[in-house]
Image (cartoon, rainbow, N blue to C red; front, top):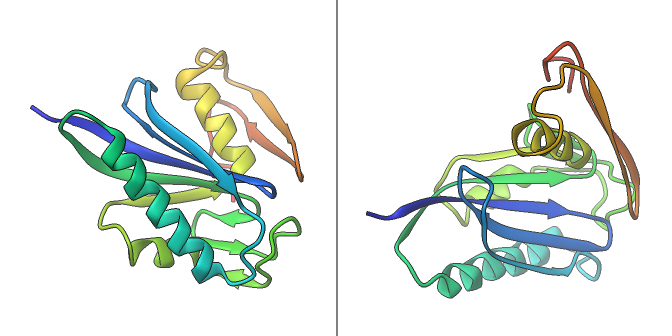
Length: 156
């Protein structure tokens, strides 16, 4: 029986982090690489796809990739786009999810990186029993994810 794993991707202004995780949040393989240095998003996408394929080969057991989740600056969950991110080299509105779909045939979800951090806290972290909290991210950029009234419905 193969293990079901998802790929998590955190796109930061400096580094991109990639990992294979199970439904309990256990990490099986991970790496990071520079986000900067790719003025063309398609060049970045090729490297991202190759890094995911590299990690797949590092796993020594049967598994099924069941989905891919992406946290990125200025990501629009509803449109699958990264929009005018100040800390990324790619300008304008990038149809990021559709570009990832060209490489992987699994469900793909993307949200703002700070919102993704808040989702991680409510599902796996110290905020499991909280109805209201906020996560503040500080790195190459500054962001916040707000969980209010036990819901993420307020997020765009």
